[in-house]
Image 1: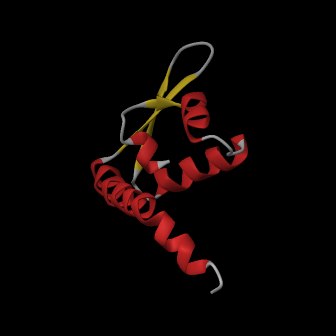
Image 2 (image 1 turned 120 degrees about the vertical axis):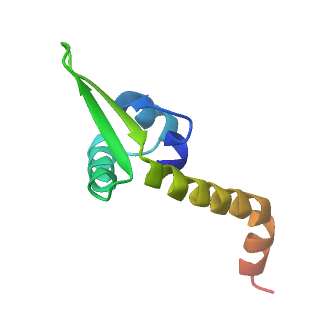
Image 3 (image 1 turned 60 degrees about the vertical axis):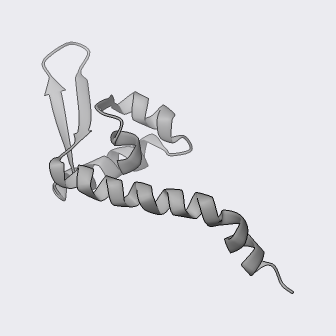
Length: 88
């Protein structure tokens, strides 16, 4: 979710599509936890139907960049990691 938000502001439904495989409840809960930790901010717009945007705080951007580096490292080394798991 942090890496997805690095691309900028997203609405709830956009995040759900971008991440994929996450339930609406789990996404809402995770966004709430990240907001409580000061990593994500949500902006509610006074329109009907309700419109809420999510984006990273400066601290969230810093963390997301580290997570993105880890994700990239895993992707680059996945074959080696999987090979190590295979019984000899």
